[in-house]
Image 1 (spheres, rainbow, N blue to C red):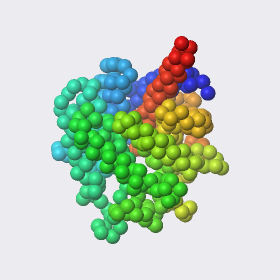
Image 2 (cartoon, rainbow, N blue to C red):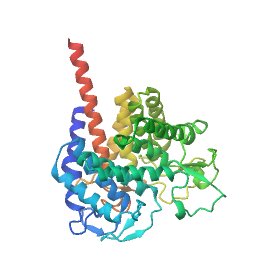
Image 3 (tube, one colour):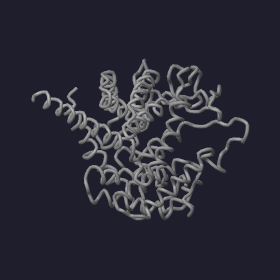
Image 4 (cartoon, helix red, strand yellow):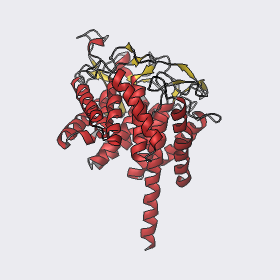
Length: 400
């Protein structure tokens, strides 16, 4: 693999294909915010607005403005989305709805904690871009609400009968590993360390199960024990793999090589566990005992799973020099670019069947927006850039 050519490939795909698609096709210039339900060509097929996708897009354009180039059109795109969210996205007390209609009227109550997490990311990153204190305050206050809801994220909208089967989910501690670094500029050092320590404990000592061969489970009993139920047996390989690059980033930030090494080991194990040896690609859901999963979409191949895997593998290679990471990166890069990239129109497909054929030719919907594809392209591009710079520096040192 020519890593210099790959670096250019990811950069070009991000800046000349994917980002222009969302910039041009998704902005609602009449009511504000973004359309995410876009067909293959980028035509709108539904106008409802989903808060976590709105927040993700604000974050994406703010991040690009902060870290790639000070393009005014990117900042304008982020600000108009944030202003829509600020005005309509919550109940007045920063309880963030799940969805709104086009005009901003609430459709679904604030049951979903990820509306909160991506609002936090959005306003945190935009506060860096603008210096706007109100945005910083929204991010910090929402983050405090998230922490207060950790034991019951859905609050009064929880459908589970209290006291019968109390399971805790991997999703929230996983995302808090990333979120705590995202809003580090709003947290004091001691609070950041405390929060990250708690998340690391949950991910690596509660949901990571050496006794199951080193895999990550999605749900455990409240006491941390395994549950022999549909939810307790559920494995989401993509979740486990994605969380590992969050852990690698924390390992770098905290100067903890042990965390990086463990994250690389778990990444490789989860890929081996989740890989479809018959058709290629990584399964969406699995049952740890091999029973039929309750999710009928269990054998689909999803965009975000493969893109997040690419991030974890290339970071693993950059941080540890693991040749196994590099070899797997090449294998999954080939699968991902062959199956998910639309050769005729911008942006990528999200949903394939088990055989790797396009199942839905949409470019965005209720769950897919301006996030995993561009964030993944950015992360892989920047990691390849680091690798190439490091190799160049090594060559120069050896030549002296």
